Image 1 (cartoon, rainbow, N blue to C red):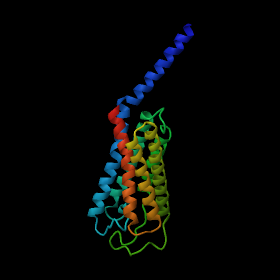
Image 2 (image 1 turned 90 degrees about the horizontal axis):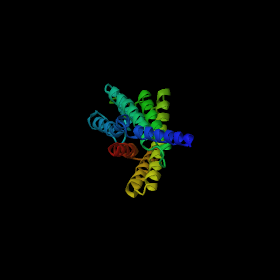
Image 3 (image 1 turned 180 degrees about the horizontal axis):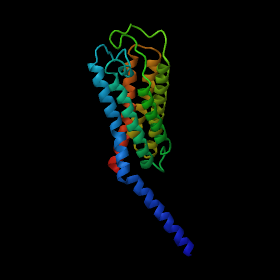
Image 4 (image 1 turned 135 degrees about the horizontal axis):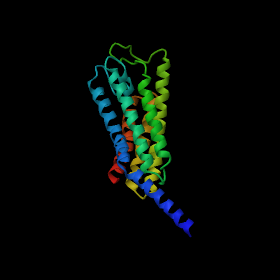
Length: 230
């Protein structure tokens, strides 16, 4: 009988500790990082897209902003945004523990953050007239860091798409139909936007940017939502 009481006490203590971890100030801080990652990255990227000489969002991907005299700003934007996303993934791991998608959502978001940091570290090659003075069209040869940037982008986009669909299942199981639909729409927007950009279709960089902002924005919204619920 005494052993049973001790066991129940240990279980209760474990549950209490888990609850404190999921609702404590550290979790709220981590979720806040995830909540600001997409708005910050999007605002800095789009502001540069509007202000940088020679940049055309219908022709140039936002990654191209890492080139030129002000390229350091976009490099820092990728690195900071990725680190904030990684921190947000840690918060989501705590907040979603024990729920459908609670295991894979944080893993996928963390990988997306790692991909963003790598995309900042490995800069894409100048192309198609940007920065100003660059010859029109794509470069004849791609550098090693250009290939590394493409690999990092592939990692980021693939994991963000998967995270959105996993979150769609999460909210579907929770009977939150609006959030479930929004998650799937965000994932589909990035999937289609990236696919169109890969085909070289007209305006592909614009559809890719819209899809990336939608998917990243949804993940940030989820982090903000769970932070409020803490």
